[in-house]
Image (tube, rainbow, N blue to C red; front, side, top):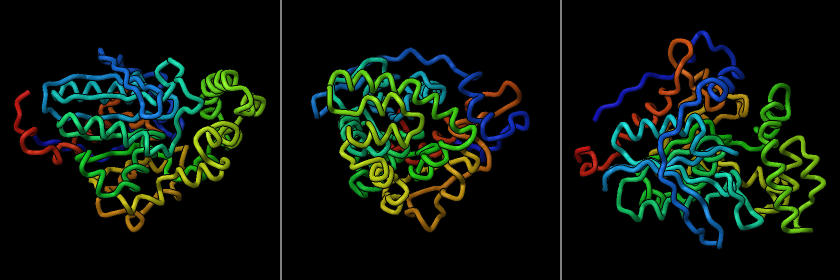
Length: 329
């Protein structure tokens, strides 16, 4: 199986970081495949929902960890799962807690550095005996890299290769970027769903969180300080952003890993991206000049989202073990 994909180049008709970020969400929303849903109980008494694209036993499995407030219907998830299905591979989108439309059972939710959540999900995936490939987008990409970087060689027993797309590798830098200019539009959109969900938690567990600060949050400094940090064992927002950032852990990765960040991503300025000397030899850095934040639109107008799934498959395919590679669809 040979897969070659050219380096990403943004189409001429879609200029600028913000258009490249927003256009796919507004204009290119592919219909999600027909998923099979499963519910898994978590080790701490909660639950998550997973949406599956099935394939014959032994075929490679692509696990996609979505971004902040994303789900299996997000454009990048739908396009990747369609590609996986066409290949005859299996795919699954595990929803972070509360992201499937159903409130989870516990005061906690999910966060950018949740390596423990990634770990137990991938441990269960790998126990089925098929080759597993892990991809993470934005927040999900940062959490995946955190697991890979802190787990080191133990991760190689669970996944054959991994990829992180538009991960906010330095959360402090990303938080500062999201306070500025047009970026405040993205912050507003995230908080539009995060704040009501979190206020419902504050009502269920009175006195646990500062509901007034959550309700008044207009930036991630306030929201993460009032909810995300205390709900997930961090002292405050600064402690959370520092400890959850994956950038310091990139030298510890021992699994072939693609780290793809557009240099014009509005969520993370290019000067905060790592260079080759800041990552392990197992890491492939890909930093095209364009693409926005999880944009990567290609083709003539109106464009399509097929470049990113093709790039991931091209990176994963050489790492498929021989028995699965030779298996007929």
